[in-house]
Image 1 (tube, protein in one colour):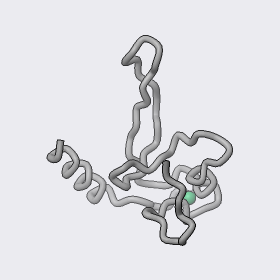
Image 2 (cartoon, helix red, strand yellow):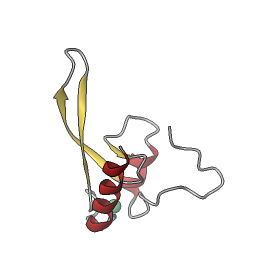
Image 3 (cartoon, protein in one colour):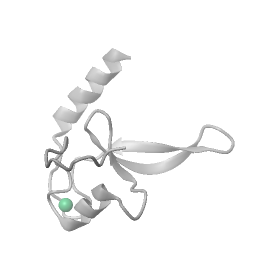
Image 4 (cartoon, helix red, strand yellow):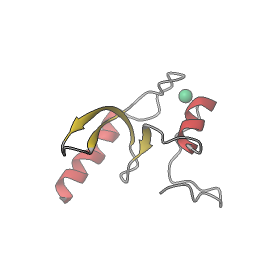
Length: 90
Ligand SMILES: [Zn+2]
């Protein structure tokens, strides 16, 4: 899991816009539904989907604006490029 940012150089810069998002990103007291993917894109879980009988999967969507303060935190084009690059790899 992420969180080894002791040296101050975090790999992403989400959570700098407001305390609320910062708290979610640190997620120490709960499992946040907003997470940074391996691709460094910020995703929000928007729902559950039944894949297996017992284990519902999470449906994630990239978010472009902070849900708390409304600041733009990701560029839509950039995210699309990253996701496209990811698709080509697999
Ligand atoms: Zn914010």
